[in-house]
Image 1: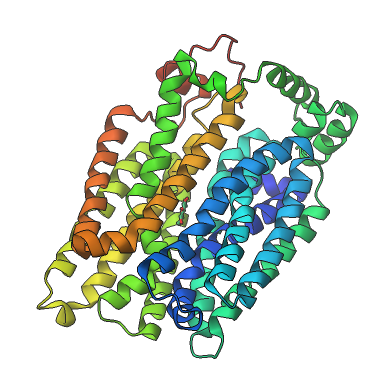
Image 2 (image 1 turned 135 degrees about the vertical axis):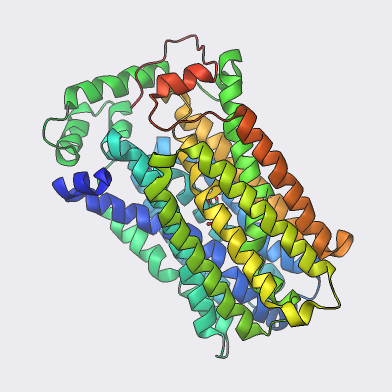
Length: 460
Ligand code: BGC
């Protein structure tokens, strides 16, 4: 893996990778921790209706949409670095607030506040890293970020399982989020400003100092500063994204963002223990089995990172999403056969494991990777922001409606609906999504019909 060879040649790059790890890890931890916490806080906070439980889970996602929006603006105004320091502090306050909540409204406020930091981390984190590390290892770090998200989810499941037997357990589950939050704020304090931000603020000399420390021997630093200035001048704003030649790319990016969510991934991530309880498990059994789901997610994300450059993105999108669709159909059959459910309760866990495997090799890493590959440099920032917001928005929609949906169209109906979206996703990948492996960005953008007013510069 050349990314690690390059990082070894310049050890400072490890520092950047570590910060990436903390941002992605927090994203995963805070989205994953609610699954187990919900089982216990329901009683303490009197969250009796499905509506109250769903909003407690999903309000974080609304906060994340707002967080991504605010972060996009503040990352330009006060810098990526300071935005990340603030987001670490926001995390710490949110974790303490959730741990101390005594009413439904307090937990809603706390979760929304945490969401602001999660949205910020999901957007500014990869952006900061992409601007600081040498261009050729950018792609690797984007997938590395996904690995850290899955590790954060796994850590949350382990914490949920570990604290389950104790009193006030759900408060501790939230409180532990203070540790990575503080680590992010303190870690970022020692990181440099992004060279791209420095150039935009007219601080070219400072940018050069940063680049000299974070580039490898033989890298063309003057060329890079020149390119940053060139691209900054031609950058297109949000309205420019709708220009004719760019629509198809945006369609692919938004399509991937929406499909990543509507196949129901976060009903599994957030409600795994609840689904396993539906299938007849007790609280502790459900939490133990969630840990298996978390481990499978991490393991197959590593497999994907190792093989994505060999077998291609489309292969994994199509194969992974087909596998998860079959698993969804299986889950539906399980819930539909009410008479025999108890004798085959292992089947629910088996389907969830196969589902998560399909997601972890396909839509999980490939969405984040592809949105960093398909857009020309001049529109990458705003286009990635739009795709990220669609992703959080549809995440909200699906998580917010899951329990109501199971009431309205039954559990099997809900999983079959997600399976139907899985089939639509596969058709979308086969017909509209380009292969990006081993191809220059110009080739990819050419296939997607790019014809901007400004010529597309050579993107890294
Ligand atoms: C998705 C998250 C999801 C996670 C699961 C990420 O790529 O954006 O919504 O919770 O994968 O591993």
